[in-house]
Structure formats: C-alpha cells, structure tokens
Amino acid sequence: MNKLSLFGLLSLVIRRDLLLAMRRRADVLTTLVFFVMVVSLFPLGVGPEPEMLRKMASGVVWVAALLASMLSLPRMFSADYLDGTLEQMLLAPQSLTALVLGKIVAHWMLSGLPLVLIAPVLGLQFDMSAQALGMLVLALLLGTPILSMIGAVGAALTLGLRGGGVLVSLLVLPLCIPVLIFGAGAVEAVTSGMSAVSNLSLLAAFMLFALVFTPFVAAQALRISME
Amino acid sequence: MAINWFKYSAPTTFYGLAGKLIPYFAWAAAILFVIGLYIGFFVAPTDAVQSEAYRIMFIHVPASILSMFIYLVMAGYAALGLIFKTRLSAMMAQALAPTGALFAFISLWTGALWGKPMWGAWWVWDARLTSELILLFLYLGFIALQASIEDSRRADKAGALLAIVGSVNVPIIYFSVKWWNTLHQGSTIKFSGTSMHIAMQQAMLAMLIACWLYAIAVTLARVRSIILEREANTTWVNELPEMKVQS
Amino acid sequence: MSWADFFAMNGYAFYVWGSYGAALLVFAIEIVMVRHRRKVTLRELRLMRDEMGEMEQGKRYDA
Image 1 (cartoon, rainbow over the protein chains, first blue to last red):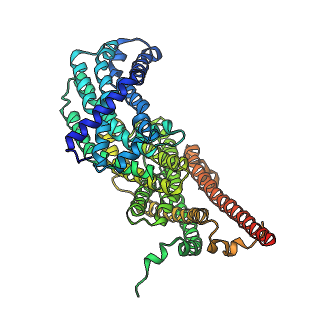
Image 2 (image 1 turned 135 degrees about the vertical axis):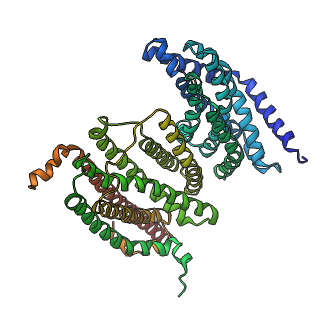
C-alpha cells in the first residue's frame, strides 16, 4: 500500500466511516432523538412561561447537545477496535494522527451536524427570535466539532474498558465547560442586544487550538490503550 | 558532592527514603497546624465587617491553593513518567490524586460555610468556587479512569495523558468561568480591609505550609503502599523488616 | 474573653467550627485510610509470599 496524501487519507477514512454508519442508521437517529427529547423535557419540568423559556433556551439546547454528543462517543473507536481494524490502522504507514482526525470529522458529521440542523426547530419550541436562532446555529457549528475532538481523547483513553460509556462522560464533560459557556454566551449576547463577536472568536480560537492538539493526543491515547 | 537523584527515582530506594521522611513531614505539619491555628484564633484581630466568620479563611484559602497546586504537581509527575518512563513518577501522580481531591472538597465545604453568613447562601456561582468544583470533577475523572484500568502500565499512561490534557484545560476553564461570572454579575469574595493584618498573614502562611507538609507526608505514605503493590513478590519486598511477621 | 465567648465565635460558631471540624474529619479519615491500606497491602503480600514458599516446598517434596 503506497502512502496517501493527507487529504486523500482523510477523505478515505471519512467516506469509510460514513458508509459504515449508513448501514447502522439507527445509531445516528438515536442520538438525534435523545437530543430532541432532552430539550423537550425542560418546558415540562420548569413550566411553559414563554419569557422564562426564551431566557433559558440557549443553555438548554447547549447542555442537551453536550449530553447527546457524549452518547455517541463510546462508539467512535469501539467498532474498529472489536473487529481488529484499529490494530491494522496503528500498524499502517499512514499517520495515525491524520487517521484519528478523519474519524473525528466523520463522528462530527454523524452526531454533531444533525444536532446543528435540528436545533432551530427546537429553538422555535422555546420561542427564540430569528437572530437568536441564527446565532444558535452558528455557535453550534463552531462548538460541536470541539465536543467531538475532546471526546475523541476520552473515547481513546477509555477504549475497551468496562463501564467505558459512563466513564467517558465523566472525563470529557468537565473539559467541555468552556464550549458550553462561550456557545450559550453567544446566543445570550444576541438576545440581550450585545455583540456576540467576542464569544464567537473565543469559540473559534478554542476550536483551532483543539484542532491542532487533540488529534495527536487522541492518537497517543489510542496507542496507550492498544498496547 | 553530587547527589545521584536517579538513585532515588528507583522505587526500591525511594520506599526506604520515604519511610524515613514521613515522620519529619508529619511532625512539622502538626506543629505548624498548632502555630497557625493559635495565631489565627488568638492573635489575629476580629475583622471589622466579617467579625469572627473570616477565620474560616485560614483553612479555606490554603485548601484551595493546595488543591490547584497538587493538580499541577500531579500533571508534572505524569508528564515526567510519560517522557522518561520512570515508574515512580506515575506512582506519585496516582498517590497525589486522592489528597488533591480531598483538598478540593475541603475548599468547597468551607467555602459554602463561609458563603452562608457572608452572602446569605450556601452556594453562589462565584468564579473561584465554580472553578474549584470543576477541579474536583477533574480529580474524580482521573481517579475513576485509573481505577477502571486493570493493567497498571496502561493505567499510568492513560492517567498521565488525562492529567496533562486537564492541566492545559484548567487555565481555559478558569478564564471562561471568570468571563461567564462577570457577564452575569456574580458575587466575588471581597475582603473588607484594604490590607490584611500582619497576624492574619502569618496565620495564613503557617496554615498553608502545614497543609503542604501534611499533603507531602500523606502522599509519601500512600506511595509506599503503591510501591509494595506493584513490586509484589520481588525479593527486596519479601525481605523488608515489616514483612517479617507471619500472617 | 472567656472560653464560652471563644467557642461562640460571635454567633458564627456553626460556620467556623463546621469548617474546621470538617477539615479535621477529612484529614483524620485520610490518615486512617492510608494506614489501613498499608496494613492490608502488607497482609496480602505476606500471604502471597507464604503461599509461594509453600508451593516451592511442595515441589521439593514431589521431587
């Protein structure tokens, strides 16, 4: 097997993972249904007053997105681990970091992107304004990739452990708090008539920072877990 | 005279060294606790605004400082273990985590008891209290990860990686929580006087050093057990004097 | 200032002593747990060693 270019490798991994996911569409749908359900539970819990709902909308959607993305994390590497593909990937002459990056992108497209697309509909349940909805989509678009990236590190560290599903949430959730703060903050800034630029740029900076380091760290974590 | 530091990084020698050092650290900690509490309760004057309640500070502040400091030390040991593959560093990181978590817990507990009379609420979403809570979560994640991995080599390395990622994230978390806090106009612990009384500073310093020495003593004691567990069935362990007694 | 005044902490007794009491309790529990862990570890190691010794002795008898 000859060495592929970085982008060739990335698209290969992404296409493969998407294809595999298409065969198990239920997994993707489960995450999405969970997200919709959690968000819809909040008005039932706190009451239907539109004013309060409008106020808490961004936070509720963000927390639900955080939880929903935790749900699919254990699956990020486990299928490849169980059928032995991951071992082959570790031995392959290609860079493991790039492989992991490909898997992160695929994971985001399967679990993050659907959340971004459905979020405006859920926002309407909370009587959010059009600008707030736009900002919610934009913030989620910047923030959910970070969740997949940090999540990849947690998923790699807990690979093959019993109780890995709960453990990965325990490890990853505290690390995701900045995303939650800036993501929900951006929407809140718009609703209270302020500029969301600082929130968005911090979110973008955090994403770039994660993009540079997390694929490498997750690759190291995979090596540790596969030893 | 050059000291061969690597000699002490071998678990065999470190086990004996730690055993000799523990009593010194423990006694120094006990003495400084007494001194710190004496100055804190009998010498330091009553605060004009907070009255006697401010005396919680002498345990709250050292516990908070140490919980953060121990996390950094832990990440440092973890990094050393990952880079130089020294087994002892990983054991130290593992031994430090419970102590760090307990200091974080003490910090939160005393913070709540300080907050109630001062702000009228057990818990306020103050930037420092919130960061401390997240720090406790990070400790718990580290402990849970290491506890769920059977193979000690994998546990060491996985824990090390998590601690390093966590320590990179801690400043970001602190900054973001602070930002969030100022946006929502949360309350912050403010001290009434412009400067602390000299006795207050002395009490604080004594308590801080006492807590630090206590943490060292307890960590060394814990790491000795970890060394024994890892080195089970080796000749040097079986020939230790404490192994003489028949079970 | 009498001892009663001292313990009353000007009405803040519950908060001040609650803080120091909890800290003391945590320290005490930690010390007990560390000692207990050492005791258990040593006991298990002794058991393991003695079992190994017996196994080796058994081998010698077999031979």
